[in-house]
Image (cartoon, rainbow, N blue to C red; front, side):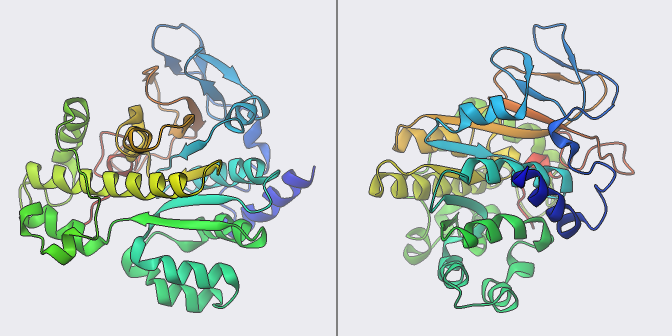
Length: 330
């Protein structure tokens, strides 16, 4: 009851009525056409349902959380521009952090250079406005802060830790335009010490979305674009793994764009290679007509309502320019 009350209060803060019609009912299936299926199964699912992809069956929120609570690492995806995905993340974090006095989360949305501002904010040395200015939120991330505020406020209230894990954006942009060989020794030292550009399945996935990305055919070519993606993902993985190794037994919830998590590509497998651990991936995912989900896409899929734009495509669907979270900005 307490958790549901908090979620209801956050709805107004997060979305200013956008999801008011849904209220606190995201734990229950929304009444949508049952059009979503899982590969190899005839069962059909609708928006609001949580799917365990290993079994191909619908599970309730508490069943999913029972599994997530046993993992060392929980990777939570999002389409950055989808408010419903952020509400799902809030509910998961609230439940996941209930039994932890000082929970630790890692966020793609902050670069390592912003860690000091984050620490000062969590310690109470900076108010919200001063924190956003110090972190240069609008310039460095740009998506509405109120989507993320409940996550930060929850960790702050529990005196937890937020890890800024992303590579400096300026370095990633430079690589996307000029290649990793263009980095100075000082710049190279700010990204992962080991970067793997030779993962064929990952390369194919990124290549499939590259033509729809800003800058395609103009300021960047695919090889440099792919280098930038790997730098992002290996740097985030290295920062998570380093913290895990330095703090044995610590559980971490990782928040990142779904494109960095799908199929275990990107952050999850690169983290686990550096620091073996039990892990699970949860992806909010738009319930599109006739969608068939691959079983190896994630561990759990939480179906959101379709949020199709004028193009008829979901803003974070793999067939769009956002590429489900591969969010390089030219």
